[in-house]
Amino acid sequence: MIAALAFSLALAGAAPAQEIGADFSLPATDGRRLDPEALRGKPYLLFFGFTHCPEICPMALSEIALRLDELGLEGDRLTPIFVTVDPARDTLAHLRDYLGWFDPRLIGLSGSAAETEAIARSFRATYRKVPTEGGDYTMDHSAAIYLIDGAGEFFGHIDYRDPPESQLAALRALLAAEKDNHHD
Image 1 (cartoon, helix red, strand yellow):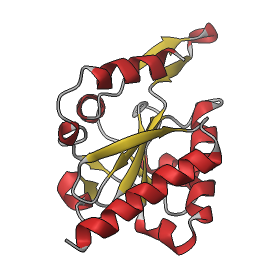
Image 2 (cartoon, one colour; image 1 turned 60 degrees about the vertical axis):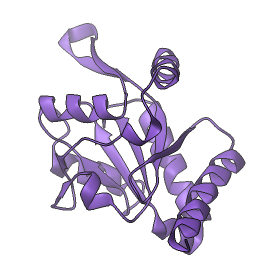
Image 3 (cartoon, helix red, strand yellow; image 1 turned 90 degrees about the vertical axis):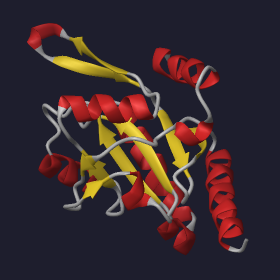
């Protein structure tokens, strides 16, 4: 996929990892405004997508929900976040309903076009509007699931197409690193 390649290339030439995700602030489906400071202290997963996505987003959200369930109580230590790249259609109310089909722990973020651009830039994610027949449109977007530790630093990423065992290993490593950081 072009977006996945763009993501890999963006990270390869990126500034230090701790700067990924360092600057954003968006309204959330749980009623608060989320920014790195509000998330500090608990590791989180973050995925960019949109609710009208025919395949990638529902698959990625399903994978996130399955991995959280497989982690059991440990899964509750992670905050899963879905950021819409289509704020014109994805209101907070619509996001809340949509995400509820996957996992009640998922928090949706939707802001203005400028706020969406700012968070995408912060995570070095890409997205673009693609016209379709009949005057409608779809969105092309990065498909990485970002892993951010409790200090707000980029820990790595997983792909929704990775084998479940690889996804779980990455999430367990994130949780283990978090435990290690709290024992120092």
